[in-house]
Image 1 (tube, each protein chain N blue to C red):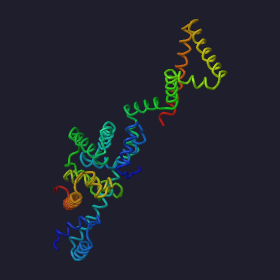
Image 2 (cartoon, each protein chain N blue to C red; image 1 turned 90 degrees about the vertical axis):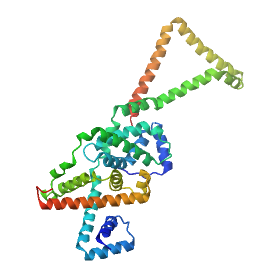
Image 3 (cartoon, each protein chain N blue to C red; image 1 turned 135 degrees about the vertical axis):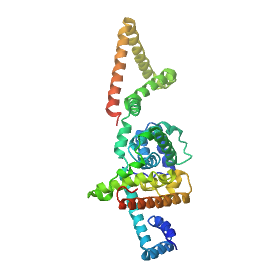
Image 4 (cartoon, helix red, strand yellow; image 1 turned 135 degrees about the horizontal axis):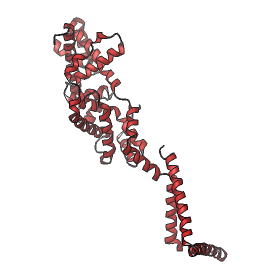
Length: 195
Length: 170
């Protein structure tokens, strides 16, 4: 997948072409914002199971609403808002179907399997579950940083918040995660039956 | 500096967000404090885990294919493919040209007459012949004329559609 860095003029041109029924231009818009959309959807609606479906709904929303894009904000900010709203709606609709946080205990511990990729996946899933306990803004900033691979400045622009707030969000989120992981590791060390 | 403050600095350590002085403070502190050293190691592990989160996002190729397979997207692509293609555009150009000649065709006559009496008479003769052919055909059997016209229009539509289906999707 190609990641494009477009300036404001290129973005407006691309939108104009997409509105003139140029499918290639629309495809480029989606592709260049794909990781951003995934990051926001995962941060708002949770990272398990239904990311695929919500991302599709975001694509449709962008497809239908592209004519409303006025170019006053950056395209990434506009798409971020659409993705966030769509993810909030989807999460509200589908929350009962999601797996509860209590299922955390069912996760295999890192020492359960010698297979490295399995362990890595288990660690990632544990981390994702813990991330769900974070504040939405912190989670979004973290997802944009590590999944979307955005710089602090880009995150500030996309989310429409000051640069200092972005840094604080990410550092606090990491501090919370590290503490939660340490607590969990200690609980696991004590063995089953002790929570 | 106390361990709580060091822990906060450790959270920023791998972001490249510390000043040289802060980084030195952390390095010196962890050299003599086992708990903070472990804390820094935990942040390093967290950094690796966070970096692996992107492995979990759905593939772009799959998402793209799924979206562009949707009926409402395909319908629009089909419409675009059928309408915006070379034969249709060429046909529209000829229709537009015909309309222009019909409306302002008289304006061209002086230009033709200026070429000389022989050209003018040849042009007038040809035009009269075309008009006579159509009038005769219509007079003899208007249904035949309508059928010929209908067949030509149908052939043009078929040709356009075939072209659109073959090349319009690309």
